[in-house]
Image 1 (tube, rainbow, N blue to C red):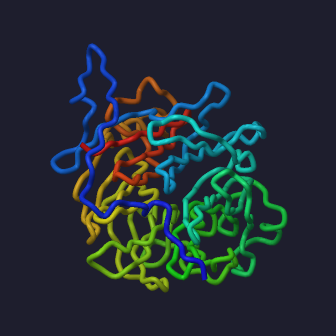
Image 2: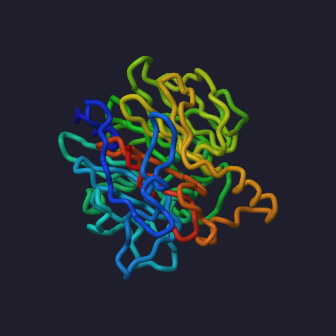
Length: 361
């Protein structure tokens, strides 16, 4: 059986390194003003870090991933009418564009992870909206396999796998994110569809599921993110970002409910390094958690302004107007991951896309 390593866990075992990325200086802003966070958790903040070539445009950034060479992968939802435009972009650690692919996910690009199998890294991708599928790709964008709704689960409408359409509902397949298992299988969160967590084997065959719609303690309202927390200091466990319930739910590795962690604002996904868990929250902040899932730091908090915007306009409007985005503040963090030096990348659910690099200082 192939060995497997989650894409975000290519981390150095030494203490957290200090990596200084170039700061942007202006007459009105110093390098110190680009540093956000407090205490032991300070980062140099570079919004709009990777830049696309002129022939491409951002179209709502969704998720980020890092490969063994510390290259950054970004997926956006994309525009279904722009069928020749890629939805996945690759950059080096300095933000320089390398390549693009993934036209088949346009209009529905969502989650992505990098996983190493027998020494070879692969990209796992989820698509929602009209795409309604999961896929395994090479890092160059070649498709290894692509699967649709797991009809054996018995939770989906007839034709959901054979004739996917842009139809929402609890009997629809709208996958959002992956978590990788020690037996080389993986878990899949159907975050916008059935609200079930599906278990697959190493070949992408459906095995079982748990969860479904509900108010917590093993059921979900938008189980958008999922991760395996195997940091030292506790048993390995499945953690689900139960977004609309504003909680994280923790489970045993066989899917048994353990506990709920509250106090979040629409948590969207998770990632871990050796010590910390990062939780991007759609309500305008990124949180860092210790092994017991206590919050030890919040970064870029702009909740008050973003929630006031929602109340005043009956919806989030700041996300559509780049002129209202503020340095060092987040609007709608949708995904975040650590790189090999324990810096952070944050992708935001905003109309014209934004990926921020947070360099540890």
